[in-house]
Image (tube, rainbow, N blue to C red; front, side):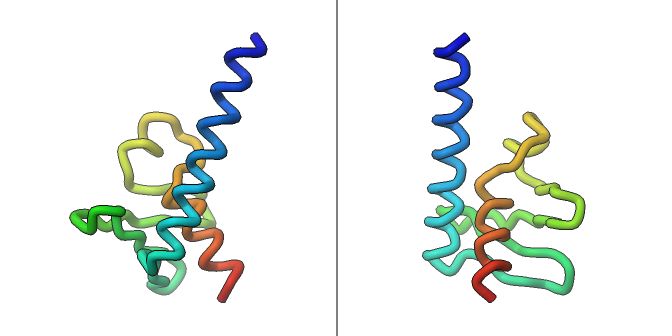
Length: 80
């Protein structure tokens, strides 16, 4: 049980860190109530809706949990 909890917490920390990186690289734009978050490689733009806590990325669709794109939008929102 402890190992599973550590793995979950480590994954969460990694998503938060990656969210900060995306934010710091200027990969987040606000478009009305939505946020457009460019992938780290710049090939894809994901749409984040903070009101619904959703993202169009595969990670969010698979886990239905906060992804790095949502974290980057939250950081962007808090700093603006």
